[in-house]
Length: 168
Image (cartoon, rainbow, N blue to C red; front, side, top):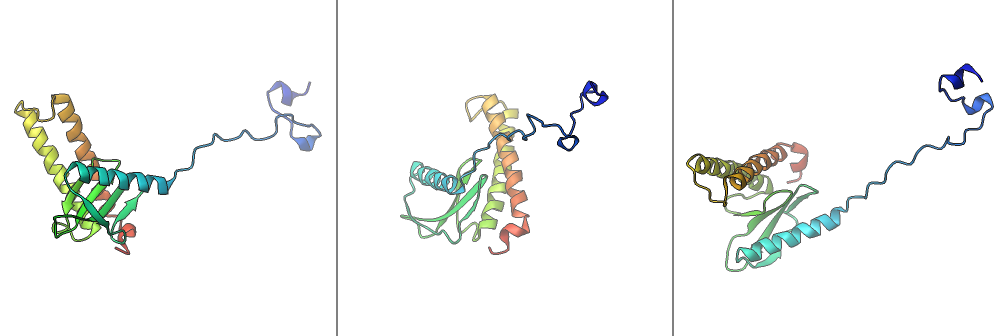
């Protein structure tokens, strides 16, 4: 037996040996992310959110809406009984909405949500410190406040990414 084999080294095929397991191991297959399906699911979530809030969507302004899978979808929609359009936010975050009067462009809407969520988280924290639990328990309230702070930060970071807004 040669030193190479004793040391655990495998001779190369160039040395005249055939290696039975020379084929590379197959990498685990990660399912492809389906952006279209994600976008459709987020639009369905936006419609459900609006319905739950008593808002009936009558038209989507797709040109001004922004979808950044798999994190954020921001829909500009017309709703019945309102003269102004509203921005509806969905994605890997709480669903929310705001009037287009408060934010004329998608980037401004994300900044609005970022700031309002920071303020809401601070309010929830103040309630906690005062022993009031508007979300059922101290644990739920603390978790939701933390979620709002983190998502608000991520939204703000997105607003600072110039490449996302070059055409906006």
